[in-house]
Amino acid sequence: MLKMKLCALAVLVPMAFVSTPAKASDDVTAALSNICKIVVADDKSELRKKIKVVQSNFRLKLKDYYEGVKCNGNSMIRAAVLNNAVEAGTLLVKKMPKKNLQQPESDGKTLQAWISEQGLSDNPIAAALQDRI
Image (cartoon, rainbow, N blue to C red; front, side, top):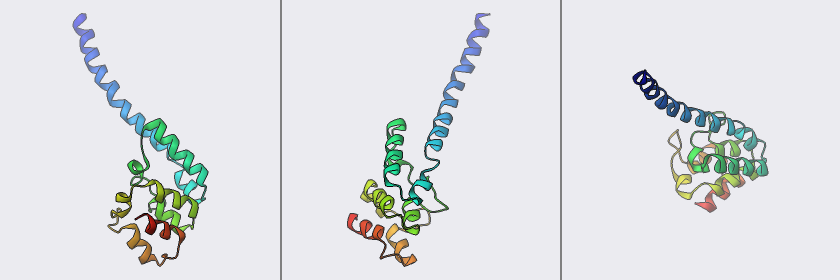
């Protein structure tokens, strides 16, 4: 009898640890679900709140989830540039580390190269990006 209980415990304990990361991942996904809408709407205060909530609840900084969040196939800063969301885009540029702003994104292009290619160099977010780098 004791042997059966130990076997059951040995099976159940690892399963408890396996389901926890999946739930945490689902929670982060839920917390970030509307961040693209916030960026496109150019709601700087709501974006600031969202970044703060994710950081305090999940101990994630913007650089940790920036690559994983896509807004219609674009990064959050690219979405801000395309939608002329100056306040939100400028906040994102200021919150991201300089090193990350200079790295190529998923398509292999840096933000500066992409902005130049799109002909959006006169956008205020592009100016903030240039000043930051």
